[in-house]
Length: 357
Image (cartoon, rainbow, N blue to C red; front, side, top):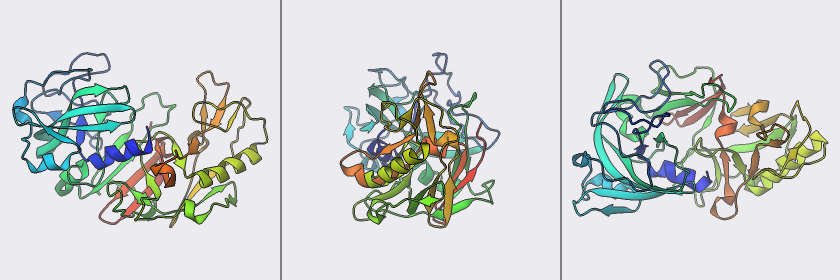
C-alpha cells in the first residue's frame, strides 16, 4: 500500500475488524474469535460479545446489532475522518486504505484480549468496501491518537507493544503481537522515538545513513533529515509492504548495490528497478543506520523473487512523487523475522532478530 495509505491507517486510530469471514468463507459464530494468529497468551485475540461485524461485500446491510453503533454527537464521532450521520443518528465515517475506499460504522462494545477486557471499546465495523486493498481479517490501528488501540488500552498495556512479522517464506505465516512492557526483549537495539506534529500518529525515528557492505553511502543529509514542520524523515510502518526511500537515498543505495552485484540488469519487475535473471547470492549486505542502532538486514529482507523464481530484485524502491517524496519508510518486508518494539512511554523503538515462524 502507499505511504499515505499507511499513514491514514495509523492516523485513523481506530480498530477496524471484519470477523464474519473465515478462510473457508464460512461465517463466524457469535462470540467467535477474530482471525488474528494465536500465540499462547502473547498474541492478540479479539472476541465480540455481539457476534460478527458486517461482511466484506460491495454493499453489506447494517448489522442487526445497530444498538451498538455510536451516536453522532459522541466525542468519538468527532475524532474519526469524514464522519457522517445516519437518519437514526448513528455515526459512520469514510477512509482510504491502499486502493480501497471504506465506509464503516462507529461501534462500541466490550473487547476481550485473552484474560483482559476493555469495556466500551470504540472501533469501526465495515459496511461498504470499494476496491480490493482491504485485508479480509481487518485492520488493527496501532498509532498514537485518541482512538487507537494503543490509546484505548493505555491502562492495561502502558503504551508498549511489539510484533514479529513472519517471513514471506513462512509456512504458518503466524507472527506474534506482545502487549505491555512484560515479556519484551531485554537485549534489543533501540533508537529514540520522535514526535512529529505534522503526522502525529506515525512512529518516526532518526535514520542517519545507509551502509552497503562496509561502505556508508553518500546520501545528502536533507534526504534523511527529520523535519517536524514538513513531515519529512523516517517512519517504521508494517502497513507498507516494501521499504521506500527518498529519491536521493534510494539512488545511492541502488547504484552501490548494482556496482557490487556486477551482473546485467533484467527488465524492471513491478515497481522494482534493480532486477537480475541470474543468481546474485550472496547479496550485498544492507544496513540501516539509526541514532544508537545499526540494523543489518538478512538476505531474505533484501531480495524478492518472481513467482517463477527466474528473476531476483532489490526489494526496495524510491518514494513516490509528491508529499511522500520526503518520507523514508522502513516497511513490512524489511522488518520480517525481527521483533520490533514500540515503547512509547520511554520514547524508543527497538529491533531484535527473531524467527517469527
